[in-house]
Image 1 (tube, one colour):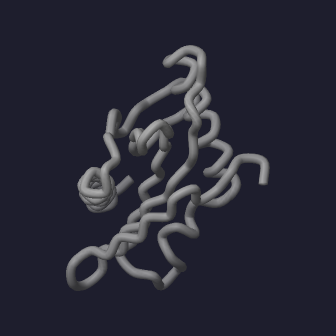
Image 2: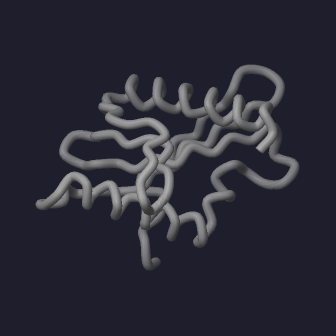
Length: 122
């Protein structure tokens, strides 16, 4: 991955984290590697554990950032979340998957937070 894309991704994750924390989320992990894959952010929203996928785009020429979280990516996030939950041990808390899309074109970044963006098996 090009250095510019890595830098943009890290900046987007930092922006997403700040946005979530302003909204009352308690972020407990960033770029968490599990045997099932990597989770961008893991946070508590009250009693709910939220797995947050952050997607950044420089422009929308090829679609919106959140459109990049396709079914294949959702399955991989599900595997990573299952591995994370296995590390926590039972009982599993209520969970959901959110997406934070960050458009980083000209001007200040624009964030779209999509709570409960997808459910596995749907």
